[in-house]
Image (cartoon, rainbow, N blue to C red; front, side):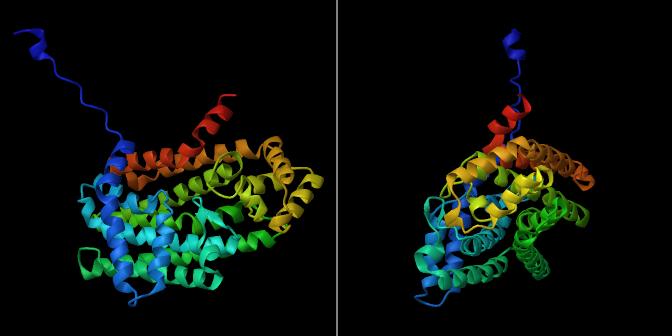
Length: 355
């Protein structure tokens, strides 16, 4: 027998990044279809809420909250089709927060298009964001399975929604605090950002029939993932591109970011006082020169390097969650999610770590 007949081709290494893309291509159209049909059927005939929802969603987005449940179901050996309606629920809830955030922050542009409050007015933006919260629960009612499962998922949605709103409230309070702390920042992020990852990750695990220990473990891991995502978002606003009006929009809005917290704690009294004053100015009075000076402070105080190191620490904590040991594929997925979150700042992170 020739040697060629004994040769066996090596199996291709599994890639969660590629699998997530496959799941997105296979199921995202169905997710968006069920979302749109629910908005249409759940709204009174001729309601302008349908038009506004479609406008907002058509501006694009990564659809992370829609796709993550697919990956969790796949990792646990469940049919991703079972989480299509739940993925749609997570996506519309996320977008409800964006509609309200844009108004509260005064952002005029999102994903290169006018935000809802700019296009339709402030009152109608509030109305739409409120409606989207209810569309979320309508979609949860379409999840296949038992009535007990849907009731549990509804409770999860309500709990995480309030956690997100509390996180937003904590952000407003941070902006009023003369001495905001890192602990205050983390508490805010664990509500505002982590809640919107705990819902799709833990909720999908519950739908897939995971043990309560694993579902709770996913909630804890999502807490760290949310902090990772928010820190990279804070960094991206200054050192990357977020598709907003200009770099440094968070500074112009007076947001207390991870970079700001570390700088306030480590800059000279004069520089700290200047930064506090800058964050409290009307956004129209914040100049490009102001943003450049703040950016330099983030570098000289070590804020950038500190936040990048905190990302690594949080990633290690997420991956060391004991409950994930019972589901190696899910643990590998969490690692892939970290990489996915950090992709926009990967080049920056590499350059800082390698001089």
